Length: 221
Image (cartoon, rainbow, N blue to C red; front, side, top):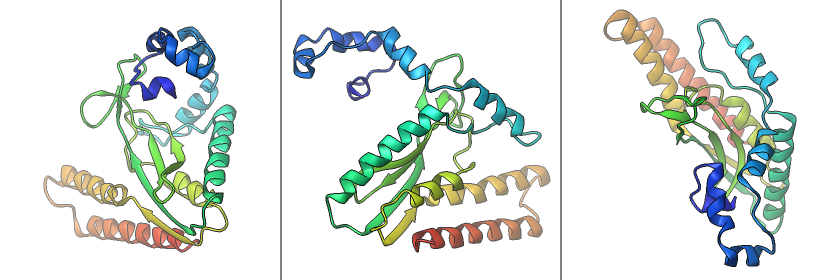
């Protein structure tokens, strides 16, 4: 966390923090080496889950979202405990969950192309606005569309809210709009112009269903 807060971009940047004797005195410890940090973080990776996600993706699909490893799920439980502990200090009964995805540029060999033309990753995040806390996240490759497979993450975030939260709201309209725009572009590309009426109807139905779903989540359903 200190490395990220200091603007670090790679494991070797930990050396800059390790050279700060004042910071080490404040922490009452020495900074770990770059190799120690690397080995620790790589423990959260499970190649078997990556391969399984590749095998389960539909024919013709390139992008995939692997399941969380056991260690990542444990880290999520730690974060959830923190969120509940902070929320318990107040009397708030309202939660506005904001869903968004952010591009993280990367020059690693494993980094995949994203829609802005570079390479990197595109993690999705669920932010609890009233508490200023992240209640859910999912790390994704750069080629995973922002509108892909968001429902499980959103549902999990709402299920993770404390029981005392009765007023529940959701904002993430860019995800819904992206669904419609993607479908429109696909139709226009095949026909050389506007999508046919049947496709337009499907787009409207899809967006309408999304709105009903979000309304249900907001009501605590």
